[in-house]
Length: 198
Image (cartoon, rainbow, N blue to C red):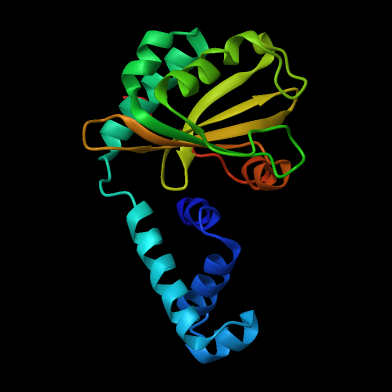
């Protein structure tokens, strides 16, 4: 998921060059022919794309208990409309990435900044989402992509998942919100592993 988000930040040319070089191990000459650029231009583009990907890589991985604690506090604050706690949990330059797959209305660009993101999540308990009234939405703390995350469901279906990147100070730096029904099918059809409560 994180790699897909990073790839979305590259230009179409950078993305093509990066994937062909780093994933499929094409030579610079082969890529140059495919993208109709000079070999020197492809080398430069590959270098820029690699540097960008390295720069976007999280520099810190929170331990599982810290991730779980932050996720639990986020869930309580967002479902309770607690704007102050949300602001405490979010890094000032937090980014919210949404994915509706063109089938569910979502932001087309990342939402940035603690106040904007906190306001977005504080409103969860007050608005109908994908035809599901707030009082009919069920939120569960589960494991998503190897770490704690949230699954929101209602009307007999999964409507969204939320997962987080957390920095060394325990603040959320990135939120990944997936509402794309095609991607959620895997969550809905798969085995859900609820995290044990301590």
